[in-house]
Image 1: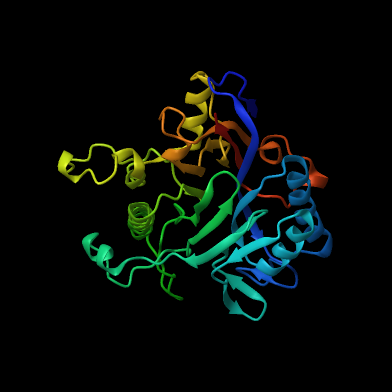
Image 2: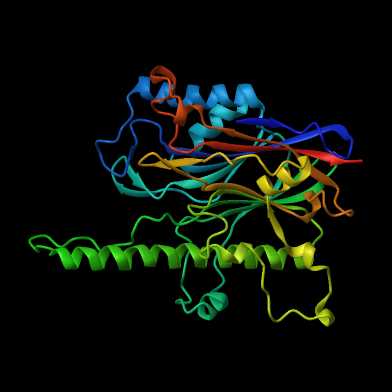
Length: 347
């Protein structure tokens, strides 16, 4: 699906900043293997995976890309540099299980514009205790927090995230111990809830970090990645900032809008004044589609606010490899759609 904004109430300048988030689904250079020794790409499979990414970038030319599920960051950097992405950051590394076998892929950030700083985003022990967690709580996948120097926008903060999946968190099955049906059901129920708790806690930590940063800076903020849930779900309610009960007028060091993050799809639909558009799914499980991949933007990109400096001019969901795949092109692509938006300056 591709929609172009031709009905904006504001004229656009020539400036157009394209953002994209891509889950690369086990991007690992052979002879490396993901999770099990049998999961090693052949040279032909590895070539096909890289060619798929090359084709997308060649067609849509995003300026800033957030990647998830990266095992081979150096190979990704080498692929992107000739395509104009001179700036690349990674702040974590996969965990080796055995020789050549890895788990825990990482997130990375690629940009055509300078990355001034890039740091891992750690969980706050004090906040963890408030959430009822242990103070040594950690993200399932370490987010990347970067500050970029962007044309017209200046210094802009970018967060790349991959929140905990819905896959149940279960204990490893003990050898020689038969599990009964009721044991399996209990494990599934508790494991799913444990995953939700982890994902929701990650959302709280992430939003708290954004709020703290926004309280000290006027930098626009961008969050991109695989959220592994519906943004409107209760599990991700930290991003909503609705129904706040303890906010009073005497707290107004800055307007509440300064701290709000907006779903780029909502900003796009509002900007073109067409609420009839159906939002495309970014992931399919047993043929059922859902939206898991998001780009969130701070109020500087909200065209409904007279003080905003930019707006979402276009929204694109690249999903042909999911809904109409070509065997020789898409077999080793990704199990997620690519979400991208184009940011335009308001005049």
